[in-house]
Image (cartoon, rainbow, N blue to C red):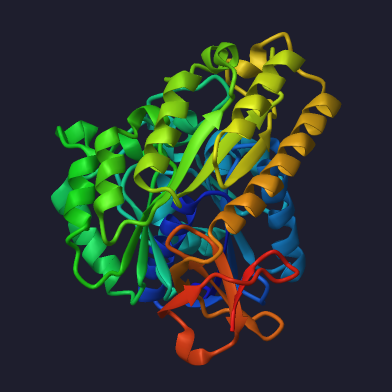
Length: 429
C-alpha cells in the first residue's frame, strides 16, 4: 500500500518551486495528501540545490532533519544535488530515493517501487543525456505563480555547475508556453513570475525570441501583473526594456547578474559581457523607468580576484543607482574550471569582501526606499500574518506592511509611501 501523507521541502531557485508544485499536483491526483515538511508525513521530498557549498550543506541538513521527525518515513531527494552528487547522497542512511532532474517527474512510480522492496533507489536522470522539457508552474500560493519558461544553460561560466545539472538550454514554443500560462491563471494568482535558468535564451530552439513571448503574455487575460526574473545583461535588449517600460502589466523590476565589476575577472569567469555593457543596461532602465527596482547578483572571492579587482567592483556598484545586491561568496564547485584554478582567494578574505558588499546593499536599499517616498504604488498583499501585520510588494518590489485585514489578501491596494517603520518597511495605515 503506498503512503498517503507527503511533504515537500524546496530549496534554491524559483524554478525549483515551480517544478515542486507541478510534481505535487501529480501526486495529489493520485491520492496523496499534502502536509508541511514540519509535520509528520509518510514521504518527505527534498528538492535540492547545489549552486554554492552553503546550499549543499542546507540540503544535507534537511535530509537528516526530516528523518529525525519520522524515522519510518521514506525520504526522496530530487533535483540538482541529487543529479551531481547522487552517490554521496546514497551513502547517507537517511536518503531512500535519489532522483536527478529527469527522473524526479516520475517520483510517484519510484515511491511505489521503494515501498514494495525497501531497497535504496539511485537514478541521476541525466546519465543518458536524453533531455526533454517538462513544463511547470507553481500553485498553492494564491498571490503569485512561478511560470517556468526555459530550462538549462549553454553558457558554461567558470564557476557554475548548472549546465551539468540541468543540461543545455531549451524551451517550449510561445503557443505552448501561453497555454501553460493560462493554466497558471486558473490558480487564482494575481501575479505571474517568469522563471528559468537562462530565460533570455527563451525560444532559441524554435526560432523565437523572448520579446515575442513578452508581447503575447502582455495580452494574457485574468492576470494583473507579470514579473521577469533574473536575465543575463547581454540578453536584455533595449527593445525588451522599452517594452516593459510601456507595459501596463509587466513590473518595473529587473534582476541582473553582474558577478564582478572588474572586466579582468569577468573574462576569467567566462561571462558574455563587460562592465560597460552592464552599466549601459542599468542606465537604459533608469532612463525609461526612473523608479525601477534593479537588483544585482555579485560573486566575491572568485579565484584570482585581487584586492584592486574587488575595489573596482565595489566602486562600480557604489556609483550605480541600484536597489540592492544579492552577494554570493565564491565556493569551489567540483567539475568547474574555477575549481581547478590555482589562485584561490583565502576564505577569510572572501568573507570580508562579502561583509563589505552586504553593508553596501543595505545602504542601497535604504536609499531606494527613500527615493520612492511620496509616491503612490500598487501593492499586492499576501495572506501571511506576522505580529498582527500582513505584507505585500509594490510593482517595483518595495515591501509594505499594514495591520492584518483579511479583505486585503490577494488584492492590489493603492498605497501612498510616506512612512518607514522601525523595521525599515513602509507602513500603510
